[in-house]
Image (cartoon, rainbow, N blue to C red; front, top):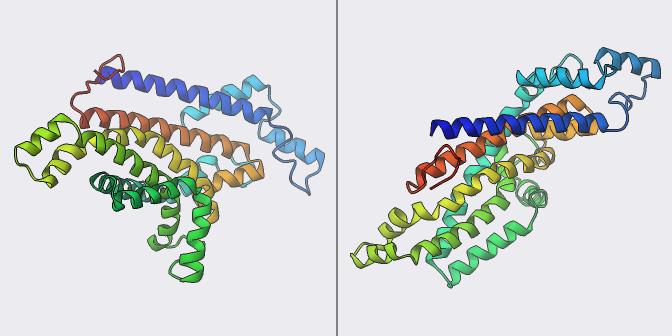
Length: 311
C-alpha cells in the first residue's frame, strides 16, 4: 500500500510539472499584453508595468522563477487586482466553490444511486421507464440551460429562491441542483445497469434461495458490489463538477473560484489563469488518488500493490 501511494504521488508530481509547464508556455504564447486592454495606459506606461512584473525578463528566467514559486503555491500578484496576490484570490473564492461542489456531489450521488436502484428493481416496468426518461433528459440538457430553467421557474415565477445571490445556504440550492443534474442522470443509468448485473449473479440467487428477504439481498449483498462502477466515476465526477461550476457560478452570481477564472480570462489576468489552473489540477489529481484507494477498500478482491494494479 505504501509503495503504491508513493508511486502515485510521484505520478501526481510529474503531472503537475507538465501542467505548470504547459500552462506557462500557453500564456506566454497568447498574443498581446495583459495590460493592453487598459484604455488609459500609454505605451510607455505599459512597458513600465511589464518591467515591474518581470515580463521583459528572458523566457527561461520567467519559467524557472514561476516553477520555483509554484512549488510553494506562490503564483505571484494579479495583473488586474492591485495589491492582491493570486493565492489570496484563490483562498477568498474557493470556500464558495467547495460548498457548492460538495452539495452538488451529494445530490448527484444520493439521488443518482436512489433512482438507479429503483429502476433496477422495477426493471421493464413503469418505474424503470420513468427513471430512465428523467436520466436521459438530465444528460441531454446542459447545466447552463438547466440553470436558466431553474431560475425562471423557482426564482422568477414561484419566487422561492433568489435569482443570483450568495448570502445563505438557501441560495446554494438552485446552483447545486443545476450543477448536479448531468452527473445525477449519468450515475442513475450507471447504477441501474450495474445493479441489474449484480441482481442476476449466482450469489444473489443463492441468497434468495436461503430465504433472505428482497430488502436484505438488495441492500446488504447487491448494493455494495453495484456501487463499484459509480466509485470509479467519482474521479471524473469531481472534474465535471469543478469544470461545470465555471458557468454555473457566473450565472448565479456566486463569487467562487470558477467565476474568478472566467473573469481572469476576460481580463487577460494571466497569473490568475495559471494559478487557478494549477490549483484545480492539484484537487483533481488528489481526488483521483483518493477514489482509487476507496475502490480498493470497498472491493476486498482488489489488492493494491506497488505496480499500481488491482489483482
